[in-house]
Structures are given as C-alpha cells and as structure tokens.
Length: 133
Image (cartoon, rainbow, N blue to C red):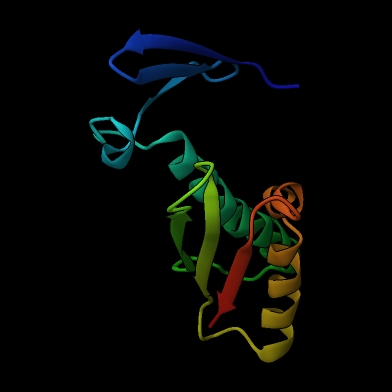
C-alpha cells in the first residue's frame, strides 16, 4: 500500500505528497475548466500514468531479457468530452520502440505494455488506442 497526502491550496491548485519518497506534485485545473493550467491537471496525470506505466512495464520485461530500451518513447494525447458530463473521452498513445530490437522482442514488449496495470484499470471506463512503431 502506498499513501499519498493531498492538500487543496486554493485557486484550483492542489499539492500532493508521495509519502514513501516525500516527493511533491502540484496540479491545476486546466484553462478550459476555470483553471490557470500552470501544472498538470488531474486528468493529465491519468494520461501520463498510462504512458509511463506502459514504458515502465516494458522496461521491467526488457531488463529481464537483457534488452536496452533507452530512447523508447511514448506520446499520449488526451481528449476530453465536449458535451455532457466532463470526463476523458479518449486516451491515444504512440509508442516508439528502438529499431535494434527484432520482431520477437518487439512483440513481447508490446504484449507487456498492453497489459500494464494502468491500462487494465482504465479498460471499460476510458477508451484507449495504442499505436506501436
């Protein structure tokens, strides 16, 4: 179990403290929802969590196989609903694997990334598209 302490500081900004590391993270409401947009928004963190979870799980698998993943990247785009209840309408992620990996390695890494815990947690609640190259 991990504990994160969150404090509302006013003006739609929150500060969160990751207890195990004492690392701080600030969020703001986005400009299209009455905020300043000077920090990641809470929904930006969901998008970031998806992309970094994919990379992290692939990194674990790559370490196990002795593969180098340095330079692997993920770009995530978050689309919010434009009407009705405000929520994430789509998370789309483009993952670029190193060219030096053969097809088998790329397939193993893709399978690992597709099964990351954040993606599994969001499935059925948030539409997601993953693009691999």
